Amino acid sequence: MIDPKLLRTEPDRLRAAQEARGESSALIDRLIEADSARRSAIASFESLRAEQKSLGKDVARAKGEEKAALIARTRELAAQVKAADTTATEAGKRFDELMLALPNPVFDDVPRGGEDDFVVVSEHGTPRDFEAEGFTPRDHLELGELLGAIDIPRGAKVSGARFYFLTGQGAMLELALINLAMAKAMEWGFTPILPPALVKPSSMEGTGYLGQAAQDVYHLPADDLYLVGTSEVALAAYHSDEILDAATLPRLYAGYSPCYRREAGSYGKDTRGIFRVHWFDKVEMFVHCRPDEADALHRTLLEFEKEFIATLELPFQVLEVASGDLGLSAARKFDCYGWIPSQGKYREITSTSNCTTFQARRLNIRMRTDAGTEPVATLNGTLCAMTRMIICLLENHQQPDGSVRIPDALRPYLGGREFLTPTNR
Image 1: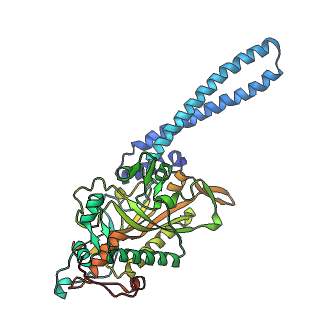
Image 2 (image 1 turned 90 degrees about the vertical axis):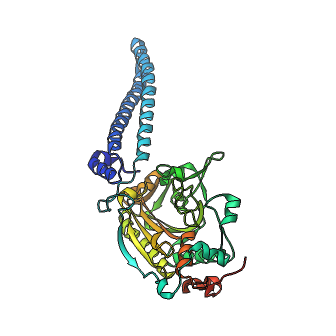
Image 3 (image 1 turned 180 degrees about the vertical axis):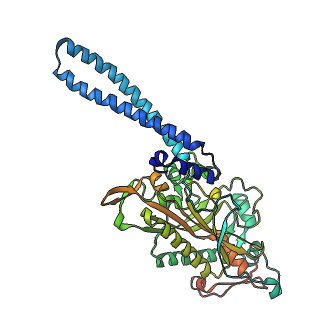
């Protein structure tokens, strides 16, 4: 949610931000009208309510016919106050509904365009030349089957399409990644958290996941709870309706949780293997901070992601996402794309977003300073989405015999092993 004052002071900026996202600027006009109607209705109610209070004092002092007239007026006012209160409430609800539909304004220097208009910021590492090494690389599913690490048929049998089992060395590899990710996060000053994967509607709405992303969310109607698509939701709502001491900021959290996504609209995309699935596990970084620290901390989260990927000895690119491809809450987002040899291209493996004060306003998270209270800023960053990181590890570090070399950083979490080796299932 934006600061409502912007509607009155910078409407053109908001219109431009909407157009940058590929959205209609007409929403801004409707919001300005709703804001005017809301403020007018509140002023009318408060004026009538003040008259009602004043009249009550006059009645106590009046006598005879004057008192009777004043009593008659108080009855009229009571009806008018009730009607004005109803009007103000309805106007407020209309305004709030429109505000919840308004995305966070993108920063002026974010690249303009849609999904394919990202800007490559940097490249790191060099993809292996498998042809020069004398063999054709296998894809992650073939490797996973050779290693006894990934079982898609039984995942589909038990749960349906886009589900899987990680078995044996596959399960061990994920546990190693979790432990490495959490160890790095704690090294950087993050507090580890195991958050709930089921949250209330207020948490989903507060983080912006019941707007444009609602079709991708699993809902449990009997309990009115949602399965999170990222632990960002629970970590953001962790401090909802709280006032934090500014001196304690920034607060850095690293959450590990399962994530659930319906993948609506992705029919036919990435159907092979575990790249696009309905459930995966993830370690997510989350920050509550002062608004003036948000940009620098956003860059820091990106550096943490880059360090983690480099630690796993993977070639990758850093992209800045274009304005029309940003989620509701993000004012800027960077993605890291890892190289996938079997596809011959880079694919998304991590992302980090600066949500400014947008989520904090919706969740009522404030900080206390000498000047009073104001909303905090929130940032999020994927440190390790397990399935996609496993894909990159298997494919980039594979050997001609189907074994997979384990990067040095992971070996302590796999008992010192240097390779994952093929096995008979």
